[in-house]
Image (tube, rainbow, N blue to C red):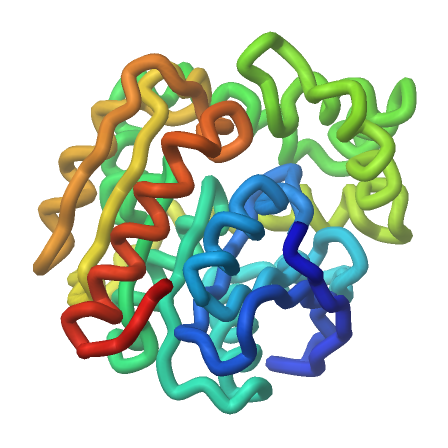
Length: 294
């Protein structure tokens, strides 16, 4: 297995817990997890991508794991979440990096790519639509029905209490590796430890509480200039596959790979298929620039 290092990095007013792997001189790739994940959710990708020569930077995003967890919901506005990514790049001396993101992490990646195109080399998004598409989709019955859980997660106090019941039983059922209806047994202790960090459940839910008002905002910058590959598990119970193709309309250079037999957690359930899709897309940028990737 590839060796990983763990450190805390101060950026954008918070301390982020960051795991790194791969050669320090390799092309930088920042991997952004979603809900209710943390850096560990990318463990099936670390060896494959680091072996291709990429420098991997994998933060616990604010509110998660061992990173800081601000109390105010406003601290989880998309501009702050994107600021964490940019601040992390600045702290590491990176002018540009590629972004690989899943779920809510994809929303952050789309935003960074749209508003700071000069910082993003290439983009890979797993099961997360472009933010404009997501907003429009909530006007339709299909996605509105799929998003029932959002209403449950934003109820103050009650949602936090439910998430904590029975050693986080609800999160175990909802979380990574749900192809068979629940998290893999050997991964449960790692997730329970992450969720048990002081303020973690409140911080994770704050992402949703900040998202709801954002759905009613119109953002001026929506175009994605970085070459973008969207990989989508068609059996996602949370996010409709009908949002995947329209997301490409916002990309100058976009490509969709639909995995018909996969769910929301495709990078957990099918790393043998997902990892090459990520690595090949990232490597194409290095080849175009005349760099080596293996």
